[in-house]
Length: 165
Ligand SMILES: [Zn+2]
Image 1 (cartoon, rainbow, N blue to C red):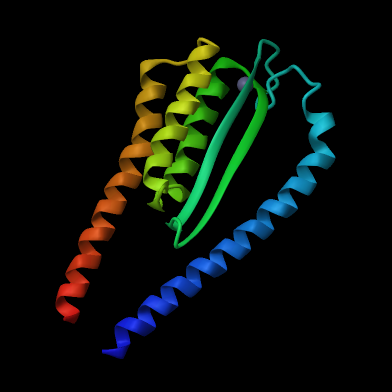
Image 2: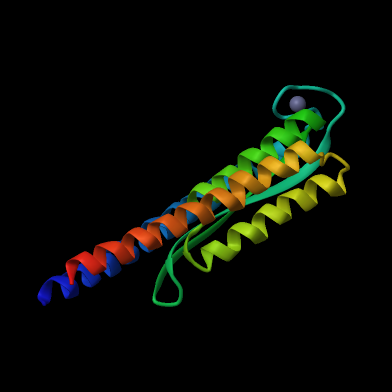
């Protein structure tokens, strides 16, 4: 069967393409960040709503596609801001959501979603802003949803391969 070989080649080609695109995006973003880094960290009001009582946070989200070390694209984004308590809780869930959406596609992505979600919860708890509701939603959107989607994708893949053969 040549079909399977073409499919494997196609998948590897797509993964390599995504690697190149993501490296390019990362490179461009780094240039932009370096240009704006000085201006953003001096303000101490909440960057989201302007509230005066705010704390400094560094949240991270990750993106991962493919199977390392065969073919994978990998990116970690940092979000450094001053935030009031409600905005920090909202942004933490938001960053976990990004990790959940783009971080779990393959290996080591499915482990990275756990790592970066716990990382954001740790950042909240260090500033005493973590509460049960926020931690619950961070884990749901950051870890449980991508794991569920990955499990469904693997089951579907197995079913398709069974039918194919
Ligand atoms: Zn705020």
